[in-house]
Image (cartoon, rainbow, N blue to C red; front, side):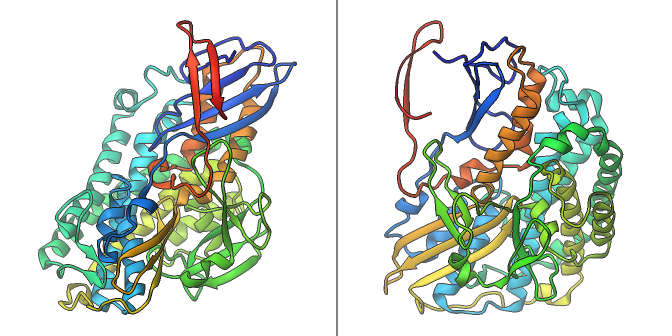
Length: 488
């Protein structure tokens, strides 16, 4: 028999029982957490289950490669731009073309808009109920409705910042979600000067929002010492894209891996060489693959990606205001920041960097160039595109026949890279806050909040390799598990 406990419940948990947080709330996609207690009522084991599966790698087989950006963008409604760009870069490689400079800058501009809107969604809409209202706040009000009541100005800022990013995406791609503007070889059409002018006029307002939010968060963050200490606060490796000078790169660059002490383990790893350093394992209790650092092996080769990892990997952001914030962040927490709680802080610094890059790109006369697409056929039977999505490194790897039909695809999505770290983090938080003698709702919320700190996109990441978990449970009318087939 299994004791089921939802995030909104407070319950006594007899020794030797199992708790389920199902579903994990305020994330993109579907997940479940299992917490097993020992005979003394202490946390003995935890598991992070991703319970949905997507089959994009299989059902794209046979499709023309040039359809891949539009198809893979449908993986997600939150970060379709990231898939569009990674897929387009893989197709560029199949065509063996160098896209025109104006097209590269246009793509990066679209990508920065994606970063701004996605980071705004994560911080304000998904995590701010915990961060601004409190981890132990009434769960009936710990949501955006509660924020509207208690912190209306902050919520309005979050809505306005996300609107800025989505509006720019719409102006460039004609659609806010799944725009078809980004294509193999570049983009479909040049940028209209009115897009530049309108966006530059609105940019100061967006910059002010991020400035206010950073100031607010820097005052509040140290009020969470227990969370800082226990949210994935352990040494791992980190991975992200950097330029030749070591600066943060979100659209282009090459991969850099650093160790827990900040020492560079591998640098300037080109997209074509990613498999030398990244391998994937399959877990028995999840549909989410588990990438690891191949030279170390599984399961020891844990590394993290995303905002926290990128700021650990990069020497600088490369934009002045974000670099000033980065310097203060490092002064507070050190050159290598371990605690996953600081993904929130890092996310705000990246949002500021994204806005600065939008300004720089729009001020570049070349952004209005009219040569925006290179045309070619199949010149390579294999193509790899790597980009930094808001949640971390995104890899699209394709193989095609001589006619350009897809024969094989593999996607390694940001949340997959973080899978092993999230699993360890769940265990760390549960052991810190969950006490079997009395299960408090706030303790279970902290377990879920650890997952939210990574801003997982499980819809993006569940692309199964090999055997995956399947479970069928038969429940009685009182919730008792009468029979079960498979693994949980």
